[in-house]
Length: 255
Image 1 (cartoon, rainbow, N blue to C red):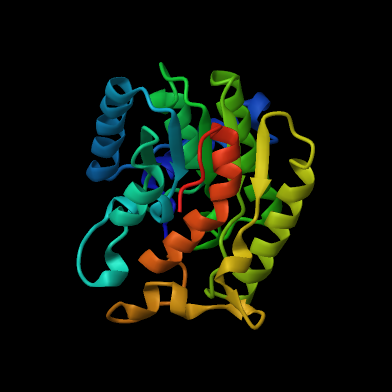
Image 2 (cartoon, one colour; image 1 turned 90 degrees about the vertical axis):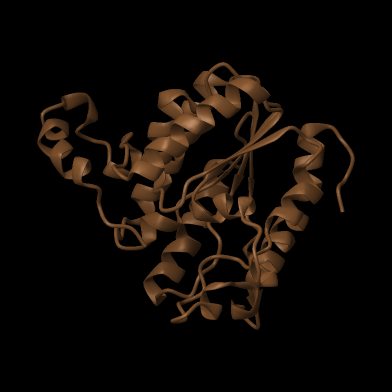
């Protein structure tokens, strides 16, 4: 899904020269991306955050960003689900297509949680670590840990709902690594203060395998391996996290 950004390669000699960072994997280091759309979206989101002062934020990659999409055919109509579950909750979507843990960490450290005090931050990240980057389970867990630590430092009163990486059908390695990561996150955050871990992968599994009927990738031309939920799959995701999210927000169940 994602190639290592050019500026990441440039940063390698510098990172190697910094003893304090030497033990950290790249997945746990803040790194920005070059594309103009990405830089522009980051700036636009900073403005939106200042103006909206959200009670709820979603931090993630393309799976989170696609909640903004609303186009034909029906499996691309994500926005109605967003409005149904989050439209009255003063929510901001901070999903950026293609982001790995390092890129979300950079965004957090460069203003995307500054000057706000949301009740809850929902985090869904890590799928791109398992694409072309091919980062290990341990590195990805470290990256997600760096993200939750960064949020907690900046937003100590905000509750974090950390979601497990969703199932995909990219490769046996990705499937096995996803399971290892989610098991590790469940153990790491079992008794964490202010952080609730929720693995809703079961929603996307049928007969022990990733259910392709809940993903949009097989419907593309050319078709691709299941990775991104369809609009229906995304609604099932919202439905699965809703009891926990409503409890953290202290409001009514949305159905």
